[in-house]
Image (cartoon, rainbow, N blue to C red; front, top):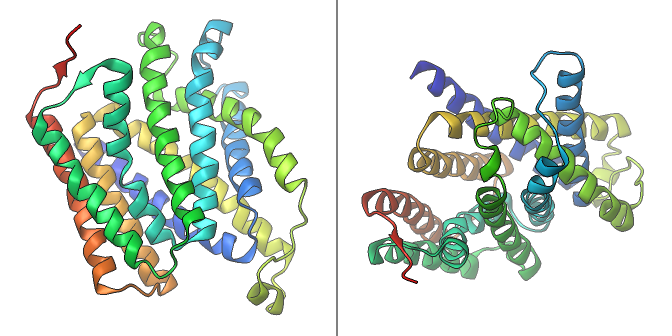
Length: 310
């Protein structure tokens, strides 16, 4: 229990600090495609070095495994860049409220791809999530459709990643070399290679010069931008690795509830750190959406899945 608690503490700490640092970087250097790609590349390099130096057991890589990981990695790449683009467009607290709707997308995908039909109470628990996100969107001061759409795109991408992982990775569930860290490492490498060409197409190789008026006026040096980029990349990889460790040591329901609490921590930390202005109805919508997410996790555990009739 102490070990698992430590994993969750690290996951929360890495994630909160990453989100604050990442938004700070975007406020100074608004290059979300480059930032998200570098973050994936950093994790890919980190894992590859551990394998080469013998500091971590190498996974048994085969063409069959790489093909199985293609779709999950594609979902991870799209979700990663869509999240970063959303963070650049709207307040980070609002992005995370929209991202709390991921269970609704997951439930839809489960029905479509696996024929998993949940108890009516489970579907009813999605209503406060949808209603809370809608209320929060209608009253969000930083709202714009682009930021909302990219946050929702990340929901579909990450839900797709989870679905594809269940479908394509079944033959590798008993592979002793595919520990959570190695699985995430391989996904990072493939996602980076998939995302890199599009990043170069969108951003090219941008100079480390401030892009916002305030950062230009403050003459933020390239060394500061580079430091933020490297620190956020390290934290991005560490929080994802620790999330895999947490998921490997607790039930999916416990992980889902823990993920909801983590999102609450990020929302409150970002509101305080960036002094984000919120309206009463906006706060109410946020509370409803977050409570709905926890209710969804509870009802999903309480009521068993009904297999779809042929």
